[in-house]
Length: 353
Ligand SMILES: [Fe+2]
Image (cartoon, rainbow, N blue to C red; front, side, top):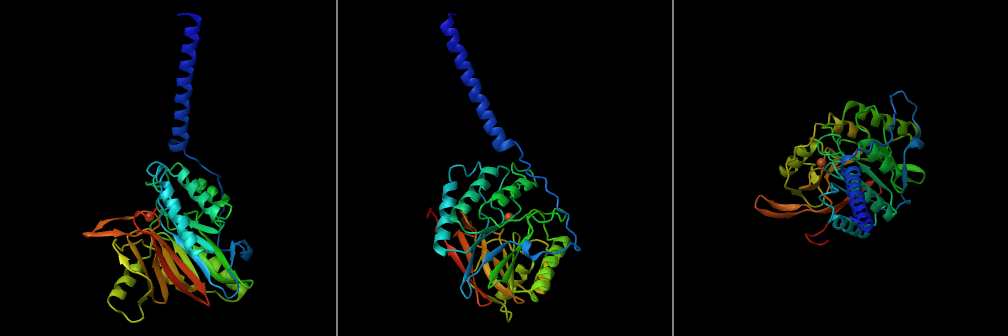
């Protein structure tokens, strides 16, 4: 082998080696490595002093409608949605353009599967591009499919959300089992017009007693400063057991149980075991509870004075259910003004994006 051929061989082998290393590095850091994030400790206790100014705020113009657009269960994944992520992005952009919201909420399962990092980074960059405040909570799939095993770990997901330019997400206490518990003040004329309790019912099957104590601490703190509690919202991923009672009460024509908007029920109604959250919600003047998780259900029913909404899923969902072609996709819009709320579901059609 002459010198020239030997040189060519070395260059070829080096190129193949570098390519192999690059591919391995890409696969490792994209799909095998676990990004740990900041190791934050916030041990909250009921006797801690409360600072109302620590709650994130959004402004409602005096006397004008305030619109909250809820995206539920976007559920994209780095691998499976590698080539069709753009469709979800287009759908979200369309929904934002149609509704011009003042706030975007996301009721969990923004991603699914263990390969969640690029998907979440994408979603956050899309949301920041809208230049509208947004507030996410977690679902049972945001950290992977089998507990906390995803590439982007819970702490890392919190870091990403906290670093979003228009994000209102605020990591809550780290000693109450789940990280994504916080509350937002919708302000009108320098006073809280509505409180939005962002409840992390994600991986766990229930809202635990400590979470309820934490939200009670916030409610009491606001009441102490402002003298009363406004009508408020709770956003959570898994629906309360009361959703089942509400649905059948409405179907049976129980007086006082009413619905607004469309009503679809293609998925089982069994939710989680929320440990008395409904009664607690009533006690702090929550009159709207918004949940995701159920994909094939979409309804809003007033039950014991509280609107229980199963939000419309964002991104593709459909198939043949009970011999019927079903396609349910879009987002749910809440319009707040004059101490009442209206609801509108914005549907997209199959193949629209
Ligand atoms: Fe879910």
